[in-house]
Length: 506
Image 1 (cartoon, rainbow, N blue to C red):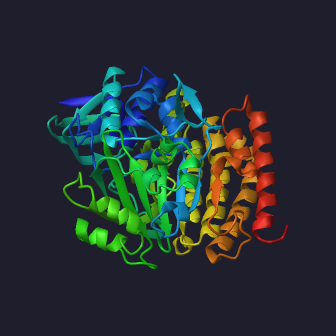
Image 2: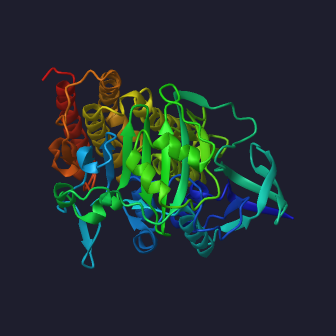
């Protein structure tokens, strides 16, 4: 049987389902089909990496895709990123950077619901099941248990030949590949972004609450108990970092990411992993030994940062999600790349339906998307060797956060990330940012900086760093493009001043 659709999305994971829902919300006259090898509903507890969502990706899910009600009721609020540097068993003795006080928090129905730019920790199975339900309710045709055997990309229509539960032939004006690793068969190999890492992860039963890893009064008094537990917690040392993330189905996600050029990470079993962790973080090893894995096995991966050389084609095909780019999991950028890629595709589909002239816009979309991927890679490449140095980590996290809030998040939240006219207006600012970023990241790699955080066993309240918070607050809401432009220029001026201090030129 032959079916004709406007958009065929190959892949029914996070990228494919959010794109389908976004398209259906923007144009209810579109016939969108999602072709998914998996079956729904999936188990709520999954082994999929990507449980922590940053500000840009969370805005996309909450406000663009319309999942705020689900995220607030069925997932967990996130109290920002939290970093601990050191190997002391008592966390009170480690350097800590994170949200401590309640001044920044949003209160809903008498409870602390998160920070102003709302973010979340999620069970991916639960989230993707909800997306699938909403896609079907909005008119998206969801083909589960179905694979694409062959793709024929043509000048007028694309042909997909299917097998599985629902075989047949699909003709589509647009094809979007959201399969995680695959794309159109004739696509060249990824362009390397010159960064690699090794990752090992699993879920364990119960709640590993880092807020309970010290009973010292000064540690307990710094912040409400829930803040540490509901943060995305990072435990850092030279060449590696480890995450501890609570999930709403009663498990905790734990993982290790290492630079293979600095430290070897190759455990084959859970006991092997505990043996690797113990000399680096005895407290985490003890906590893990006292619980039991929720997963049947360790999940391991060699992570190679790269980006597709073409993500958006004037022949009306595109790649999104991990089919388009991967950089690293530190700072949780995966959903950000999905958000930008999906939004660029949605803009192109609408423009194609309106006037058919998309070749120039595809080229712009490619430059914008690849620029974001390259920018993310810059903040990871060569930095793991300094993850055991608290002054470097503290300065880097604050710098990276200010740039992320003041530029990436600001532009996306105001619908300007792919706007050619606005991007043309801010070309001087973008070039300045690129040059400044390359210079500061180079200094951070070498550790040749004037620290922006105190030394010793200090604790840094994330919200008390005025220059970083100016960028954060500015990303919340601006009334129009002129205000966005003024805010971008103000952030750039601040970053230039801070950059001079980091370089010792202030």
